[in-house]
Length: 110
Length: 114
Image (cartoon, rainbow over all chains, first blue to last red; front, side, top):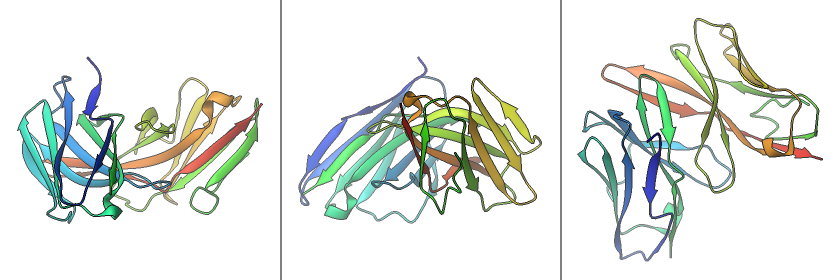
């Protein structure tokens, strides 16, 4: 298995909702990442997990809460989001400089 | 056709032409660079990479050139095809103790007409 799988592919949520994005990989990669991508912009790093520990938080608002339950799974918990948080959320994993990206979750906050 | 990446975000070429997409990076300590292709609604797809101890690397129809003196990368696509239409990003790998992160450039949209 050489893929990063993200679910759901699309998500519409209200500003008072709580939802979670999920990411899974079975390549044995020990680093996992969340990126946010707005339309016509490059992906921007949000969080880095290395060996299941949070290594980087790029000053992301607390309404985004990452979680790494084990070496294969990465979650992003969402609460009280704003319409400007609507974007494509990409998960990636890496090992020895080789990165693999998922297809993303298209999030719309209404 | 050729773009300067940051200043010309769209490159339009005819099928069969060679395309050159340029990218400037900022961190002289970056040791590894990757070109990604991203189609609409999909995640970035690896095209080719190059380490900082190399100047040139070739793949199938693609070549990456690295000029560390001016911190510049280019992606050359030979005999461009309509299926090459996408947004292309360069990315630099930045290492820190215990982890690494990928930082993306602005991106260039490549439009290939038949």
